Length: 619
Image (cartoon, rainbow, N blue to C red; front, side):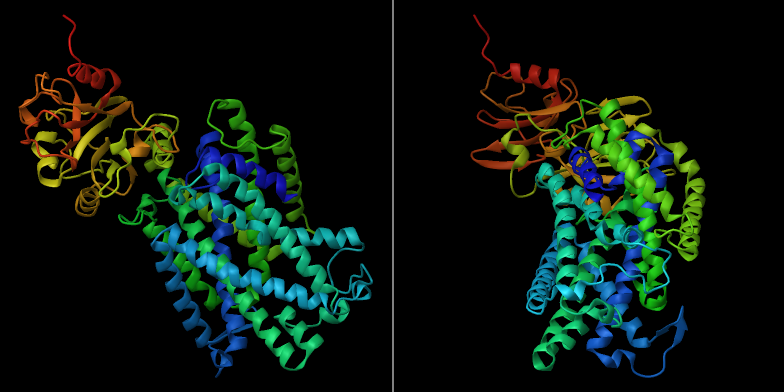
């Protein structure tokens, strides 16, 4: 059932490699309202998992370190005792994961690799040791309802699992959330999504079969938590049983931490994406100037993480099924997005296309729609329960309030402009790239921002601002309403709500973002992506070329500011290579000499005209 859904993500995340996942796809396909439903439901599912993981981690740590439960409990919630040790440890881990994720996807991924190695190693060891005690008779009777669930057959028992299965297989949805910052081959990332689902299902199945066959299941289910670890104490006993017991506990903690870490990243990125299109407050779109991570959105994830130990394990069941409902709704909408975009944007670059095409997507839609209905219908095995339904209804109502309150912010920007915030990191390939665009060292950066209301510089001309002279920042594009100014002159003014594209070397751009009032809705990008040499859509009609000065040019021997290259030719010199040395964003007083290689940015016609000055004229 999950493979068709994950296939939809394979195609969509390779086609639209931006933060937001299903929410971003829904915005592209359907607009504000549907993207809000998809994004808010998915965010609820994501953010719910964070305290869930925090609860279980401290619970298992309490088994390894009994002192965490020493003394009288602070209080009891939903039948679970809450201890001060739980709160302290849970808060400390939450803060640690926050700082790891603030440093970016690569740092978070390094932690994931270490934890996953421990998790998979413990899982494989558990399977092998369980197989040594395997007895087929332990799996019989194949079906017997000895609980209170409303099912009376094997099929009913299997269906009852569906209420929680989306929760346990949902990790693949975190992959599209981090794709914007991760880089790499987007086609490979798409295929990773389906591989993740397949391997997860296989891993769970093997664990269930091997552990289930190692001990009579009717006795096995009487074990408390952690049941798998207690199983090895029972079937092996002595030092071997204790050793396996500890290994399984450590593996379980690593598994919980991987999910906790992954969803802290995913939650913050989907929140940032919703903020970019004004579904939630703009404050949450702010990115760290050094790492590009969503600062304030990560703080929301941190708050949810810290909340977990205060809730305790009594709410685990309801949190699990509430999260499952959020996923199913988001997944159904995502499958619809693939169907819609195949029809409305057939020429959009698709590095990966799913087998079966639209038919596979329709199958995913139908399966998720049926499952969604069953989750909310009382009296049948898949029903999630009244508590989970109340949590879900309350969550969606809270989202609607935020959506309505942000109405004025959405009206300030057209859908096209808000889409440019969301898809700003996209570009396209297959263009010849000048060598200087991908040079090492201080690389060029483009910062795009919307001039905030009451900005001190609003209404001033570029000459008055003198950002080039004082900040080493040069304006290459201004979007004013429906007007687009490319490489504007010093007389051009910047007004409130204009979208400004400024260029400089990395250090200058960072200082500019930190010290200047450029608002919250800003993104930074490389010149490589901005010009369309990366893996995403070209964001500008500008191009860039190299011109070798041979001495016949009218500007040769003159300082840059006197050449007229910007004022008359509407081009900009962003670098000069002289005697093997590179000078980025050269000073306006620098004299152009014979043999210099100029790095020039401008519209196609303008840079071609400038280059033609270096071509010998026929006699």
